[in-house]
Image (tube, rainbow, N blue to C red; front, side):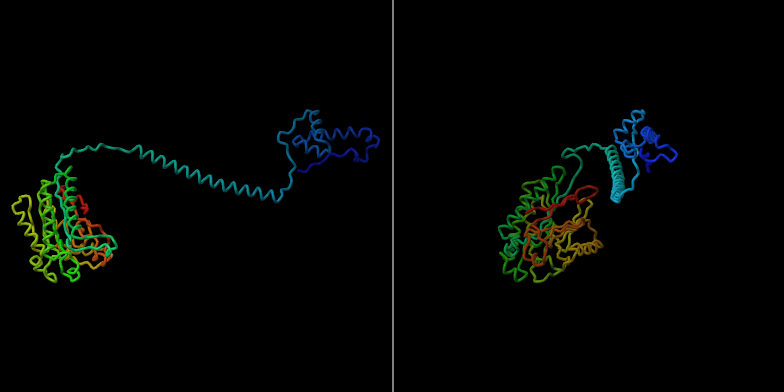
Length: 414
């Protein structure tokens, strides 16, 4: 804003005026000119008026009051050119304001999203519905099952020296006896646990072979703690003692499904067509059957061939030792060769479940079950780079639900 200052009292008032008149009334004229200027520029501040008129701020205030003029509420200041520093400051303020506005918009959007999620949660909470589940008393209903305790791969006379298996296992005659006792004790304990809610009167005990290691290889003949006949006699003692333990401590009926393993043979190589007749284990089973012949709660099914079948309710189970399944390692483990074998066997006679041992690795494949071992991790497992597994045997239930169903699978800790 350009400010035209009033003329000073010593400035010329024009050539047509008398100098004497100027001298006589110049002060008065100048005073009126300042008053007129203040009156005509009320929008300016006292400081600006003082500078323009060449008088003090107090003088301006005095004149304004004398003329009863109001002080400007928002007095204007002369417009001056912005400096570069001020322009940069304004630009920075504008940018900051823009960034804050963007952040504010994002924050508002996030808050709105949270509010929507909150509403959805309240909606879910509001729409939850429950119903009461009635409890059953023990013994109510018609729940029934058959228990299975799978025994295989005990190798009662084969030693495992801790130093030879990185101190992961130890096995000798005393330990084999202790583990066989735990098999029967802990297996019966599992049955008793499930008997609290389910009627279980029948126990099936598959004896799937390799209870002895035998001297079929030179190194085994050197290291075994007993001769083959002595080992078979000891394994028989373990099994008979365990069966009598269950008869004494339960009212279960027992069916023993017996198979020979590849270690129980009396020939150097496997004889497929005469495997059973050349097996020390088959002789052992038949001797046990004779021993329990007068016990009505015990029955034996001694397999003369590779497989045997047991039907529980409408559910068919196939049993074998497992040495006929060829496995030379692979990414899929034994699953791939087992699936191929079961597919071929089902073409001849279908089974809902196939149970076998031999591989010393307990595994539930849904339609097949591989049993563990009593001997545990040994030199052979270490040499073939098998996964470490603690000694264990398999336990499972077949319930009467919809004609038969495998409902429980658990290890028997030994």
